[in-house]
Image 1 (cartoon, rainbow, N blue to C red):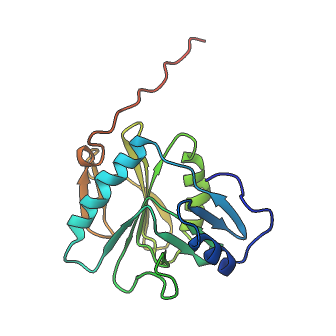
Image 2 (cartoon, rainbow, N blue to C red):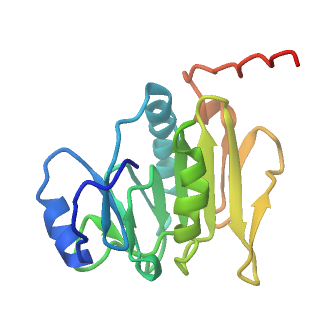
Length: 199
């Protein structure tokens, strides 16, 4: 997410009309402000291209559907629209009836974070995503460090950090699928952390 692109605030209807008229650039919307989406790095793109088809294959034959990259998620309670990297919807949780480019009821949202977006993906986006009553799991993936964290909503509506049963498997309990890290990070170059400086 970048800096606001328009000087005046827009209503949700004005934003959707304006953004849907654009051909190439994507924008996110938070309570009247519009933010241009920046391009992604190769490692980010590779993780999405590895994981989305894998989830799609695992969910084939179920009522759940997987969407990636170019579908907006509307969080009505936050007056916000975001483009998650991957989103899963399930029975009765189809795209908004008035806009085929919008999903109103996500069940799983997956974001691939870069060093420049990881704080916002957790503190900004997730804070708003979890206002969606249908969202059950939020996954934040670090492509550069071959790592991820799963946030899961439990019975009392609280969110917990969910440890996977095995450290090398992504488990999404809300849709009953597991994906090995090896599949998620296939052909993704690992970035070593910078060396620590001596005091």
